[in-house]
Image (cartoon, rainbow, N blue to C red; front, top):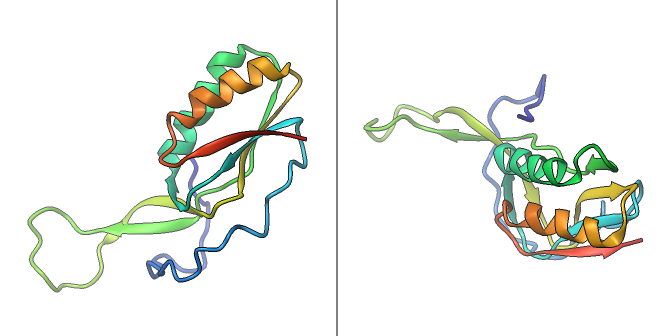
Length: 136
């Protein structure tokens, strides 16, 4: 799964969703011909990205090229079960990528539009947000 090799700060603040505006970066299809664009905001975990990637790769069967345009670098901490209140922040449990609406998550090239639509449909079922199929 995707995890950063080295991080500047081991534990981050959670952050607040103050600005629910659309994404300004990563909104264009730069590498492939077809893309999967997010319509909601939320956190995508490294496991969800891997599950979506596997769904796409299994459907393509050695055809086409896939680009993953997001990388989970935000650490999420969790305390152990039955730990009393206090005692500091928990250990890093997993990594997420905060997504805003309009971000391109995946791109595909080298296959026809019908196959790309079906591959992205299978991938979107693994993701926790609404997505849309877009083409260049």
